[in-house]
Length: 137
Image (cartoon, rainbow, N blue to C red; front, side):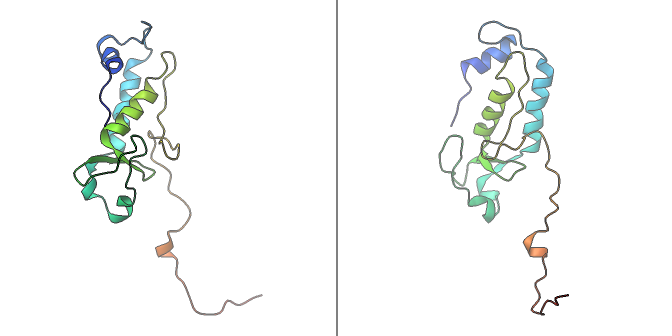
């Protein structure tokens, strides 16, 4: 698992980048991080349903999940260790001193800040199959 870096501690203490530059919009960056935290809720891996448990490895640290690991499920339905995903998001939000980053899913590049719009494709379990022949016109 990843640990908080000295660079991360420096950001929180001084609100400055590695070369002493002042970060712009510190509050906006913190708000983005809080939004990722609220949208990708933390839970035990053992509490996920079987479909989600099919993802047996965290794509960030490339370690297998254990039943007692705290994980986060993204809006795009990918599973990561909680600490891995939050460090990933923080690294993307704070990557540039002058521009606020927008974190995306490491697997599919979907935004971690937005709830995806509902798909217009009907789920397969709602499709009614019929044995009746289809009439051609």
